[in-house]
Length: 124
Image 1 (cartoon, rainbow, N blue to C red):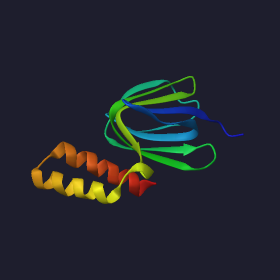
Image 2 (cartoon, rainbow, N blue to C red):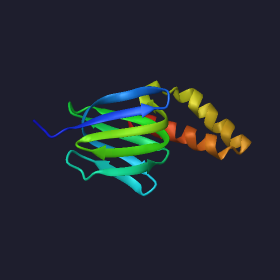
Image 3 (spheres, rainbow, N blue to C red):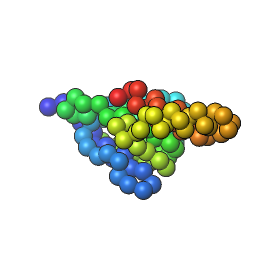
């Protein structure tokens, strides 16, 4: 059996995903980080970006994450996000409209959120 780590992806309003994984890749303020079983303990600040989870059964789960924290200790990885949604929950057409509206209005924060959501969908 391959080495695994337990992953909890939690948003402010709900538990988004929980399970066993072999690799998690996330964007932190220090850059992209990959966490595998046995990784050194860490605590970091999440940047907006896609989080990719390689599950123990070989599947890939991708989520759009906007801010929060990442913590790893004792083979348990916690991703505590301000906002998080799985890529298969994202309505691509609505998100494309949101991106265009944000660009037209010069709303950089909304543009960044929509861009992250679209990158999460394209990464799945």
